[in-house]
Image (cartoon, rainbow, N blue to C red; front, side):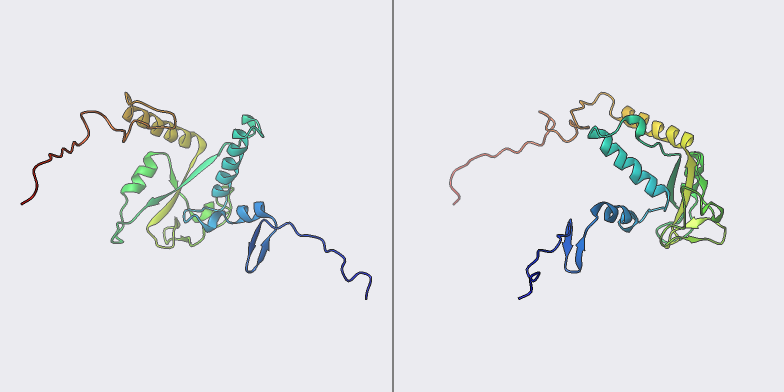
Length: 194
């Protein structure tokens, strides 16, 4: 019998095993799958968001300093541009423009926030970027406008919950039972049914 017949083989570190084989590098697997679960994925911008979210997780675990968390230079949003029946509707586009957004166009493809057309996206006849259904249009704004919009949302939220009992973790009092405000069910016991 050959001397090397029972020589142990080098083990491969596999994080995820499937019927098609194993995934050795789980981190790169997760990173390449960003757009596969997100229908609003914009190559470039969405990757920047994932990098920021990953850094926030590292910050929470004490692995990095706050100064190492990247700040997003742009914000990309899909706005509805058609009714549910498919008719053009510019109401949301007006909202986008009022919030400092500009329609993304074919000229924006190749910029850091949109390295290529989003999956299923296309350039509409007017040059804007739409999703495959044609009912969403991509808009972009810079960091300054995005920060103002985020602050406006924060202020509106705080105004809506002003005076509410805020428990740890958010709106703790919403949905809680309050004496006198809950429906009351009373049951009267009577005699036997005849």
